[in-house]
Amino acid sequence: MTQDKFSVAIVGGGLCGVACAVGLLKLGIKSTVFEATPKFGEVGAGVGLGPNALRALEGLGILDAVMARVEDKEFADRRSLFVSGHGTHETVYDYENSTEWTVADAGLAIHRAAFLDALVPLLDPQTTQFNKRCSSITTLPSGVHRIHFTDGTTHDADLVVGADGIRSTTRGAVVDESAADKLLQFTNTVAYRGLVPTEALVRDGLKTDLTKRLHMFLGIDKHLVVFPIKSGKIINIVAFSTDNSVPVGSVAVPGPWVQPVPQQELLDEYAGWGPDVRIMLNHMKTPSKWFIHALKPLDTFIRGRIALVGDAAHSMCPHLGSGVGQGFEDVYVLCQLLAHPSTNLSNLEDVLRAYDTVRRPRANMVLERSFRAGVIYESFGKPGYGLQDMEGHLAGIWEPIWRHDLSGDISTAMAALSAS
Image (cartoon, rainbow, N blue to C red; front, side, top):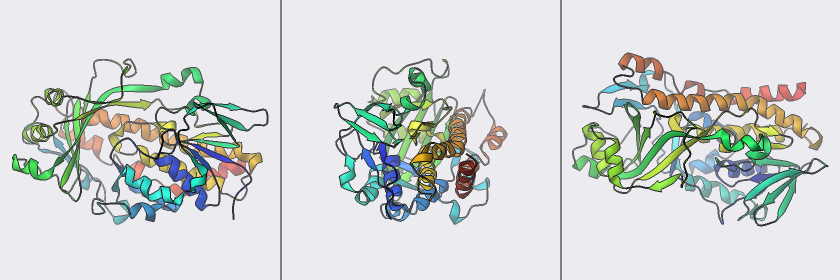
């Protein structure tokens, strides 16, 4: 049965926007998706999904479609092995020792394009519009929101879902617009990314077996995240480096946030690191450099009948691999609330307040923990943390994220709605 008690517009056709549109449609709620680019697409390659994210996708009714597109279904154990980036790469901490592991705790990795390929066919093409970049949102006297696009067109909707990513325009309609730009900060961290054939690394003498588990190579002001894709035939390398000489938020990035850089810049950054790190970096012939930005925690994810989801609400550092998962949790809770039989046009603002009551504290907690995780990874070694210190900081670091009770969130949100 179709829900036609209110109209829904989703600004942004990335992972969260498409998941929201499909999730709502499965619950009988039509929406219109406005995507700024000429077609669906995502910047970046693979994305890791923890068990909490998979539960959210299952709740949305889209997990099976996503799983059908996953190449590396065997890459399900996301417990990291932390090793020193220097010397002989001794083990710092093995997350296998952190908690008892069950199949329910498994995660997976999927290419962003594959995720969209799985869900886009489930959308109604008549309700998707491309080349629609939102420039602003105004509110009419009736309470209806009017979305303004850079091509001069507009669209009116009772409810607007802002899923337009880290450089969100809809965020400016939710928070104080004059402060919106100051909320998004360069974290002083850059990431060099590359893909390398495993065979080439082994041929050059790599000792660490990178084909089965995610590895973290740790050091002062730097760390590497390394994991296998393509059934272990390719190694995905992300090398982080942080400038701690200046405060976070004091440096603006004038150019593109993703840039090709000479390999020598990467090699110079990691001068003196251990042999396996040097072998990996020697094979990153054409690295891309990403300037990592994150939001300060927002005071609200909603305003009127506008709700932010995903990076628009809580863009975070990638150090716990949980940003996309938090977006899927947003979408799951929002879809469940909107589909509730008691939800209608007259109480939409109450519904969104219930969403904010549940999602904002949790997503902001993960945002802050993600920043802190990067500090921990890049504090190993003199004059930073020793082995015992690292065990204390790393043990259970993912548990509050992975083992979260999503059904409890729905109950809490429903209780908040009933009390409003």
